[in-house]
Every structure is written in C-alpha cells, then in structure tokens.
Length: 497
Image (cartoon, rainbow, N blue to C red; front, side, top):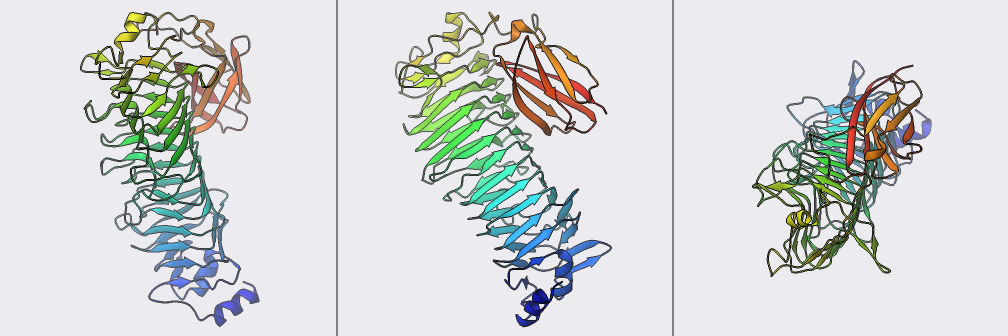
C-alpha cells in the first residue's frame, strides 16, 4: 500500500464505529487485503477466505476492486454500502456469500455510485442488492438464495442507469428484479436466465417494474421460467402513478402464473418476437393464466407483433379501457401483427383473444391457429359474443407460407432437417424445412445443459439453411433452439475441438 493511503488512514482516525468500517474517501483504490490491514478487525482473512464482521461503507471517491478469485463471507445482518465504486472482475469467479447459509447477510446498497460493475460473481444468501441513483453494470453473475431483509427484489433499482446482462438469477424469495412502486427506474435487462424466483409464492412476478420516468425499460433476450403458482413472468405497472415505457422482445417466457402484464395508465409497451407459452401453472382462469394481459385506462397502449403465444389459459386478455394494437397496416399506423396463437384455452374452450372492454381493437394480420374464418371467430371473444364489448378487427388474417393449419401431432413435421457437422468445431450448418419456414429471418439460441443462453442471434436463411459460428463456445453438449415464426424446434449438439 502506498504512503498516500497509509497516511490518509492514520490521519482520518480509523473511522471504526460500532462495528463498522468507513473508508476515508481520499480517492484511492482498495482491495480486500487492504481492508484486512486497516479495518481494525472488521475484515479478516483465514485460509484465503475474507470475512466481513461488521458493516462496510465505501465512501465517495474511493474504489474497491476484486481482480482475483476472492472468496468473501459476510456475517449475519452485515450490509455493504457503496457510495464510491465497487468493481469485481476476477478471471474466474468471485464468491460473495454469507458466513453461514442459515444466517443471511443484509446485502448491498449502491447509492450515487458512478461506475460500479460486478462481473463473474456468485452472490448468494444476502438480503438484496439495492441500487439507488447509480450507474451500474451486473454481468455474467449468479444471484441466488436471497431473502428480503434488505429489498423486496433480489435486485431492486431506483433511478440511475442499471444494466443487467447475461446473469443467472434464481430461487430468490422475492422477485428477481424489481423497482420501488414510486421510483423512477428503467433498467436494461438483457440476455439473463431467470427462473424459480418468488419462492415464498406471493402474488409477484419474477420481473416487477413500475414508473420509468422519461427513460425506457428494456427487457430483451431473456429466458424467464416459473415454478411457483403465484409468480408471474413480467409485470409493468403504474398503479402508484407515473409513466412507464417498455420494450419487451425476444424473450422466452414459460411456466409462470401469467406471461406479461401491463397494469395501470400512462403505459406504452413494445412487445415483439417473444415466445410466451404454458403460463398456466396456477390453473385458475379467473385469477390469471394470460399470455399477455392489459388492464387499465385508454392510456395503457401497446404495439404487439411477432409473438408466439401458446398453451396459456388465455392468449391475450384486455380489461378496463386498455388499448393494445395487435396488428394494423395503414398510412398512419404500421404494426405488422404476425402474432401466432394456438392452444390457448380453459374450461374446454379456446381463447386466443378476450376483449373484455368496450373499446374496439385492431388485431389484423395474425395467425389464429387456423385459416378457417369461422374457426378464427370462435377463438376471439368480443362484440358478437357480448354486445357490450368492443369489436375486434382481425381481418385480414395471416396465412403462413405453406401452412394450412398449425401442424397437429398427427401431421407434425420437423423444422430442422439436418445439422452438419455434429459434433462441430467452429461452424455448424442447419438445413431447414422450406415448407415450414414462415420467415427468412431465423432466430437461434444455443443453451448449455443448465438452460443458460451461450449465444443468441438472428440469421437469414439462404437456400433453406443458416450458418452458425460456434468457435467462441467451449466444448461440450448444448441445446440448439431454432425458431421460424410460430415453429420452434430444439436439438442437441456437440461442440468439440
């Protein structure tokens, strides 16, 4: 440690108060080894494991870095507060955990932190990560087994610019990601694997966000899988006031109480190219089960296109006076539609779209699981079913190329004809069934055996095949998911060197 830091520490008193250690705020870099030397026993080390025995406060202007594979254990109820910058970027993985899994530490509070970044960390048995008015990145981390002693969500955001990229967030007592009801928060949630959160099974979704202010929430390319029958997938809400702008696209949302809900007024959502399937685990149609639910005032609007919505109790439900646009092509509004609905229903009936409002809705250029117009009418509940409801304008419908009906079990065909080579080393060629291609834009995802997306992108099919570069992926067995419109197929692949 340099003389500047040593002098500052000696000059500023130890700042050890009631079991806390507060860094002096002199603009220097700290490591956990430095904390062991100068925290007067708040931080100790034993057999290469750092132990934090009291609250740790990183003052503005100071920086704490983890650049090796540190193992840090926090005593019960200990809180680490960051006003400065906390950067973790180990070559392998840093572990931030409780000293005993039976006794949670309080967690982390980042407030007015200008550039904190956590990479490659396993963070577990804490009370929550609270991020207030901070610009922060959390990337390639595992966040699991949190209780709610510090925040409701495992990660809770308020103001600032927060990016959550390629993390695994699972089996936390509350939501994976949340914002306070009256907070301005617009996190960028990209490429995460989120599963089995809300383990106390309260009425909360796995992603629960509210007022975004003048910024835009982005929830893109995530896999959100449920386990507990009260937990939904994604909710954006303004019941506590404010405005909400959100972009929700390219996600796979499955096995939750519901898929996506937009609740309140002054909400505008862009919901595109998601797979929203089998969100029916509660099994009570009057309480949930919608692939998409819009409930609120006429200022609750959305543009909805390119989604595959199947296996839910309801495909889309619209309540109050909400006005989503599900497809419209004129000189003023252009929404391509191209949503694919099939096998959404309950109590022996199919419900692709239930317009439970007095508002007329646009839902043109969608595929409703059939090309028979009488059959389409049967899966849409609106004015012909109840004169007090608004009319759904669903004509013209979309007729997918080469498809008369969505393939049933009896006539199902494979989207993927062949994968070559398999095993592969750098490039794989996927040959596709031309008859089942509903779009030349093919979405693909390579997932490891834990379901984590290793690579996700789009490709243009040329001569009915696509090429995928796997050179950056470690050797091993993976799942390859290929999607064209409503058709999705998963095959196992082997990457070898």
